[in-house]
Image 1: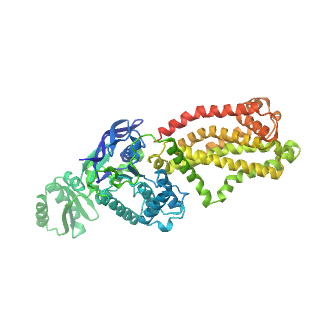
Image 2: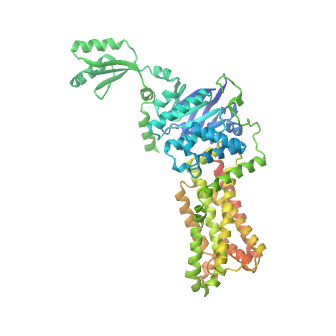
Image 3: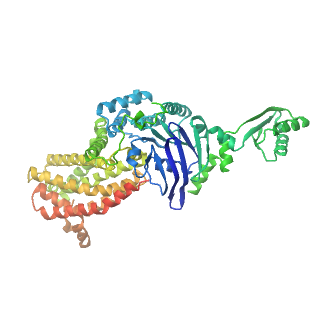
Amino acid sequence: MTYAIQAEGLAKRYGETRALDGIDLEVPRGRLLGVLGPNGAGKTTAVRILATLLRPDGGRAQVGGFDVVRQAHQVRSLIGLTGQYAAVDETLTGVENLVMIGRLLDLPRRDAKRRAAELLERFALTEAAGRAAKTYSGGMRRRLDLAASLVGRPQVLFLDEPTTGLDPRSRTDLWGVVRRLQDDGVTVLLTTQYLEEADQLADDIVVFDHGRVIASGTPDELKATTGAQVLEVRPAEAARLGLVEQVVAEVLGAVPEVTGGQVSAAVRDPAVVPAVVRRLDDLGVVAAELSLRKASLDEVFLALTGHRAEDGAEAEEVAA
Amino acid sequence: MTATTTTPTATASVPLVTSPRLGPMAALRHTATLAWRSLVQIKHNPMELLDLSVQPIMFLLLFTYVFGGAIAGSTGDYLQFSLPGLIVQNMLFATLTTAIGLNSDVTKGVFDRLRSLPIARSAPLAGRIVADTLKQVWAFALFLGLGMVLGFRVQTGVIGVVGALALLLAFALGMSWLSVLIGLRASSVEKVQIVAFSLMMPITFTSNAFVPTKTMPEWLQRWVEINPVTHLADAVRGLLGGGPVSSSATVSLLWAAGIAIVFAPLSIRAFRNHS
């Protein structure tokens, strides 16, 4: 199997902090790898190394079969990069931004213009093409940024938190664009803090925490490996919530979570469900809702790291 | 355009690069494109040409008409003395546009985008410096033109003017290495402006750019005689207004070379290690 991206033992240190502490990655051609993790987990550092912007302290990586350190120039001719913030020249118009990239990629002027028009059309920016990018909304800038990274028809695309800070509609639009790229056979490495985003887009997911890969697999595998299915019980009468909590705790032998009028708990053995139902029946508690579902990636993340993605972000900030 | 193909060029219209080094022609092309990028905004907003010049023009008018009479006895005599100094001061401040532009690229991520492209490594710096050099030429022409309208007389001729411009550009080029370092290292554009102001103001004023040295206290005179701004102002005075040039021009060029020798390696290191 040919891998579009392959990394072994990547390490990067900033002073005392190990931003990357031995990362292995393998992305087959044409697949989308979601790199999931809180702020400060090392996602951006990994992208910067793979995109030749940063030299690793240890380990090695190849993109499209080229070494990111020794053959950086070849790597650069294969990749597109869209960073966390929209890296467009705000004083230039949309079309000028794209023509500039085209010219830098040695396209003849006419081809650069044609490619710019094509991409502006594709990203619904044709009307705004002649306006300076500083007049664009956040979503428009992000689309222009993504368009800029596609001018050279990259085989491998790095999207570093492409939807951070976008409103839900712009986010959904951008997801559509990413799906189309997948259809075109582009290999994508996408980092995100949003579990839903990884779940929606990724063929495979790796979870980063503190510069290490702590889990990997397809979204379904990840949900399955933590064992966790989730049992949710909502009593018909809110007053019986405490009793339900007690029953679930007894049967599972673990403390369940109580939120929004319902009791939920991770379940490894589905056989416990009838036991819970029987106990509740004995006690005369009527359940308005009782369900067993696959754990969300959010819960998987919690189970893997012991902290929620958002909590992790805050903790990093305090530590910094 | 299918996922199964393993031919690397299947989706690439850009020819696959096999050689790790780019030729000098490619480097020139990339530099020209990036210089175009820094200048094309003037096309959309021609007022920017004036924005660049509002402060210099204000300085020119204030110095000539407010201080001129007091310092030199008449505004006309003072203009003849101070215009070269003002040109030098303006050139030094203008070198910091390189720092500001570069810093804005770095903080906005444009710099990363450029570095992730298969272009000549030097092009992002060189393109900006080329564009800023052209802005220097514009500022020089504006100053000289306005000065002449106000009564400044070029005593030397075309060769003198061209010589003065060449000397100023050479010095600006040396200074741009310092500017690159500041641009890459500063955490924000505001910081760049603070550094610029607190560095350039004292250096340009503790010179003979605006007043003759002999009215200053002796300890200050000693510094003024070392200050490159003094030598540069003297050289430009000689080249435009007539008078000795060779020693002051030589010292100016040595200073420019010295600044470049110190700051070029530091800048290049900052550029390479940029993370």
